[in-house]
Image (tube, rainbow over all chains, first blue to last red; front, top):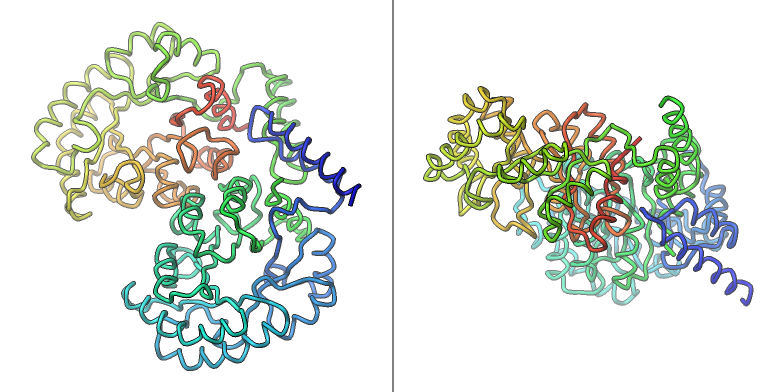
Length: 298
Length: 292
């Protein structure tokens, strides 16, 4: 512990020194120095997770080992059959998913015809989430199909409210993802933060929150930091991705992720940030490490 | 010259291989060592005077020259002689119109607006300038289509004269969410629709990166989709409109690269409100946008 605290001090002075630079603080320099001091140890302000589907070529076993080396503590968007694999490596699943309709993006809670099957599916998986020691599960609004915003909120709220007692009993939060409906998920309904926040109020329980996907929301509405500051109490999870293109979150794209991470930390957020970019350079794990580093603010 | 340029290229290439986001301050420091105050020439740098209200134009012009800025903008005819003393241009002059809230979307204002712009076109031409700023006005309950139609009807009256004097009228895109409630020209798609309706190369848009990132996001994709309608760019940190550095959410070098890749030959004007020492901030932000 002593040596760790010394290493932390060394890191702090490096970060402070980097901050004195003229420009966008010298991240590469600060990172290189902190790597030397800390090895794979990260700063602890952001809890790092990653979405497995972006690394589909790498078997989960191998991927879990590599994630540990980088300092990630969670691999997410995994179902019950995959949880034992990551548990072997002491990793958690910050945002699990279920099976069947519960995992469907375009068919969700906004259509009352789906409610029975969705409720059955979530009632089935929520106790398993709890048994695995996890506390969240992802869900979706479904596509709009001509429905008004208000009808969509009402329909979603009616369906989700039926699940809240189960969520409370097992201490599991349903987390609905915000996705862009402009480029990737045409017609998806939960595509604006303010709509999602209104739905949270309509459901009226701490067991229903939003996944603010920074990539999707920058494409759909912009104004990321101000939106996070305004709506953070409704947000239980974050995803990343380079804009445009959903690749690495580095200098090849328009968002400056360290400032966004700083804003997230300042809201008092204690959850995870899941990397969800599609690596484009051939060495997927190097890209993942870079993405984690960019978000690992001091 | 070729040696300095090559040295610069190597510096940039060297940093990209490092882990993490490219180390801008290192690149900049090394660039400075090699090039002095010389800038890279891919971006033409301008600055909006109103953000430096306390500094007299004369001394501001001298400081801008030292930084490598070649234009000071949003200035009217009374200020143009001062710029000329220092060999600076005015990439986007003002001096006509009735302000931001009263613009071309209101037909009742067309006669007065047309007269005002007809008056300034010859003066702009005489000063050697090629653009002038204009605004849509506030919405006041008007539909998008009625607003577009009204604007086009008014602007088309000015196009023959704009063409004659070689002046492009540039309408600013502003956010109506935080700074300019009810302003009509608040979406790039709407502005592009208006450009098609006016149907002249002498009417274009000012894409303000700060305003549009607040209003609609997706900056690079929007610039790539609509660049043929864009005649000018403004900057500003999001949120807060302060320095465009690591204190805010946009990574400006990537946005500048996208602008250069569209073939843009115009100016990018700094329009942030300095929170720190104003001239040091201005120099910093020009440096951030001055991609190699």
